[in-house]
Length: 114
Length: 112
Image 1 (cartoon, rainbow over the protein chains, first blue to last red):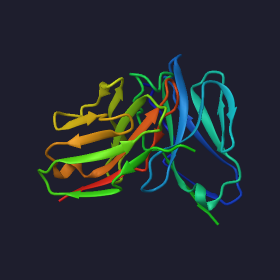
Image 2 (cartoon, rainbow over the protein chains, first blue to last red):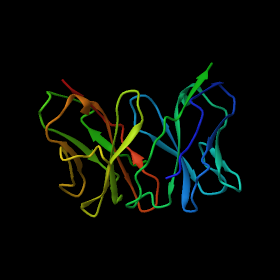
Image 3 (cartoon, chains in turn cyan, red):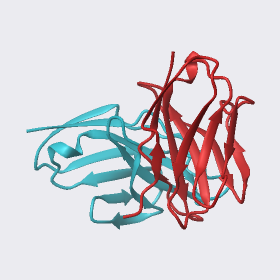
Image 4 (spheres, one colour):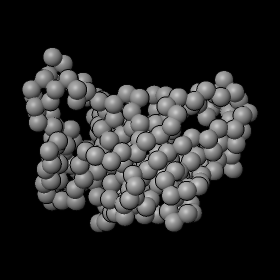
């Protein structure tokens, strides 16, 4: 499984756009990039998943350059409730299968201030 | 939106006792997982389960641990003889084939 590197922490203010970049230099051809969010005393919550280029949903956007060695999670106009730990995970497309265990790093602790 | 539910939210047990943590995965999901998170540390994979058998397990998942899907809705994690170091949040997750995993909000297990 590809190792990921992301900042330990980030600070932002309400209403700003936040971009969290994750490096994954050893990403394999079959690997997808997935981001989870975790609030204290809660389980990780799926945010977004992508393979290449750009993916957007109602919560976030995920930008993946052509070489796929990094990815950027973009949170538009954050609010106080977006304060959480954000995890970047890289792994085989078979997330539901026998190779589907997720390897979590330490994540990025995002603090949103008023 | 369907959710993974876990009970109890907090379990306090004496060291050496058996404990069973319960999970109700999302109803049409076929793949089931347990993870744990020791306070202040990373989320760690324990075991994955599909078609009524273990697909993969980590080094943490030793002979003291077992999983079961006793009926069509529940998925349980049993720790036979708990140790102090088993104190952690335990998360259940479920998924469809080749789809992201969805997590419950966990059971906080405290071993005294």
